[in-house]
Image (cartoon, rainbow, N blue to C red; front, side):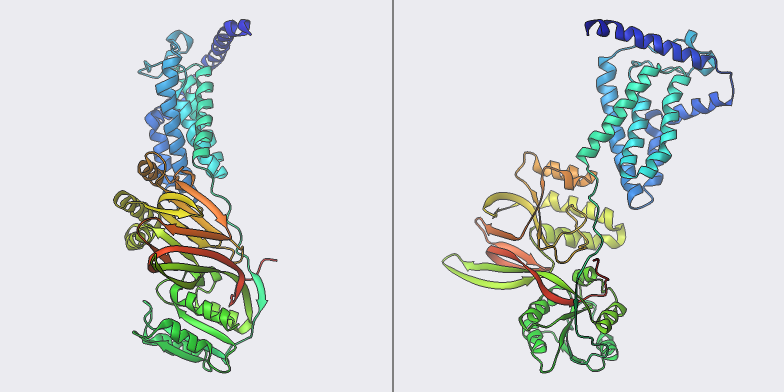
Length: 501
């Protein structure tokens, strides 16, 4: 072993000289200018920043690949220039080793070992390729060309390029562990159930929340045109939504309950449908329609198809039992959770994001909203399943939501029997700085301040001041504790999606 360590550098130097002589024997030609220009273009990462800029114009994988490629490049460049070039001083090739016309001018004066150009090139290509293999394959020849150009122009020995390339691969892999790949999103799946066919609305009672943000007089006219035999009741301002939906659900002769409104209204109707053993027909309307979107009823055509075919699905619901009021005189209330519940700054984050989204687009609006929210607001202290936490966000979805970060959007499966619990905590040292950095770099899901768990039952309890608990977008003030339990496949609902068997 000691003999190998003594003779190893000599063997490497001998092999370096052998390869450089092979390069020097190549005839002069246009390829010399090509590799000189390619090497110059990659200096200080200019080439890779330009490519990343083009990739970033395409949303989705190309944009994420560009971001990860630059992140890996930054790590590789820092490790190469600040650590290895200092630890491994080495002279660069001399003019006697290659024809003068091939030498880069001026030649760098830093240590030859390892090649920073090679490290950056390979880090970017491999980092992008870990996100999108197709992009990685397209970038591989460019990265290989940059690495070879450093030998061709006399800037480095071949072993410098090999070590630099290895550092580039390592940087890409390390940053990928820090910024893991997003888990695959399952194909939308439903558990089918046969429901009454109501093509003309006979036997259908519809409760319409006329206070919904997108309501207009034409809404009622459209519903009466689509379902001429249905009973349609418009809930006016000042009327109790729960009471009016209960009246619609208990109307004589009905076989299905319909609802037009936002998620809060739909949640109230879902609870009434379960109590009275009625299937629920969700009409897309109101301020927020996340449940309708998850069901696949994004338009009236979808509703008509599901109603006419009697196509339905079984859906889980969440049951929430809250303790409110004074500790010595607690008040217990119960409600149905259709989509989500949250404690902390999440409602503020969502409001900021939705306000900025028309001007900035969804990704940038989410980033700006997160930075503003977490920089200004303070964390909340509470018990979650008996464990004390100081947190900015407690977010709970009824079912797994995707993507698996602080901005979930889609729920492909509606009867997985789980709560999707996500907490962004302030328990860790430098928690706010960690969170802001994770938000800027898009690594919230992998950050130490983010905790993703699942369960069928969740209990939260305030410490000190009571909480504001938002359930399906409806804030409930003065909450001292809340118990969440999944009721599996508790609701029958019309859905046009073909169930995956």
